[in-house]
Amino acid sequence: MAQVLSAFREAGCHGVPWFQVAGHDLTRVLPGCPDPASCAAMGGLDLGEVSLGVDGADGDEPVELGQAVTDIGFRKPSGSAVLAAVVALASRAGPLLVFDDSGEQVFLVSPGEDSTHLAAYWPW
Image (cartoon, rainbow, N blue to C red; front, side, top):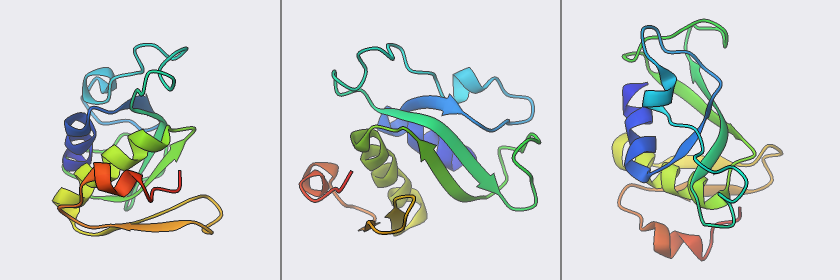
């Protein structure tokens, strides 16, 4: 959990957490969008609503920062924010398979990939 949240911060992303971390103020861990009305038009890195799955925890109970994240979901993110977050995560976790809700669009991001280069191929 801590590494995922750190990767989001490293990438400059913000969003609305749909999860709880025991003993932590989530606005410090994952800040909200500073200007929702113009964020996307200004190239902001809004992840939208962020869900983090953790083994053995249901979505409503607080999790610990040391627990492993098994899956990540975004609702209404900007494509550039998802790309920035995935590149930062891949540098920590290894290759990541990214797909849309339908599973029709799939993209592989490996450690060391350059988001500027990937943006030309990024489907979202």
